[in-house]
Each structure stands twice: as structure tokens, then as C-alpha cells.
Length: 88
Image (cartoon, rainbow, N blue to C red):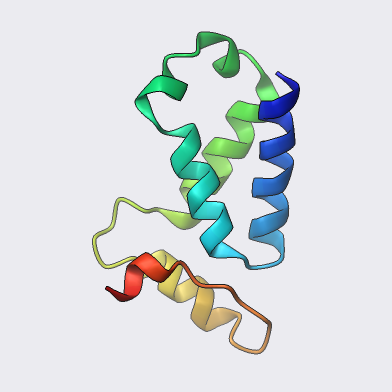
């Protein structure tokens, strides 16, 4: 439980500072089949909220990463760490 809460805080902080590479990696870890099967993680409200917020904000289901590209474009005056997978 404590590890999941730690990574939720890191996920939220990554999104706040525009480090999308780390955010996508942590979100991917939470969405692995083996992690999804851990029912007790879904019962922790902070974990469920962090995953839902990140999924909504990043929307990685889009093949062209439109939301992620828009986030990077909107924050072009800030330091942004992009998700490198969207450039391949």
C-alpha cells in the first residue's frame, strides 16, 4: 500500500512538473495485467484517483498522442520532458 501511494505521489508530481516520460512509465506500471489484478490497490481511493486523473490527462489510447502533444505545446515556455515513444 505504501509503495503504491508513493508512486501515485510521484505520478502526480511528474504531471505537475511536465515530466511526461516518467508519468507514462508509472502509469504503464499501474496498468500492467499483474498490477491490475491486485484488488486491494483499487480499494485505495488515492491510487484510483491518481490513475484516473493521469489516464484522463494523458489519454494514451490515441495513436497519435494528440492530448500529449497538446500538453507539450501548451507548456512550450516551461521545461518539459516529453514521452519519447511518441516520436518513433
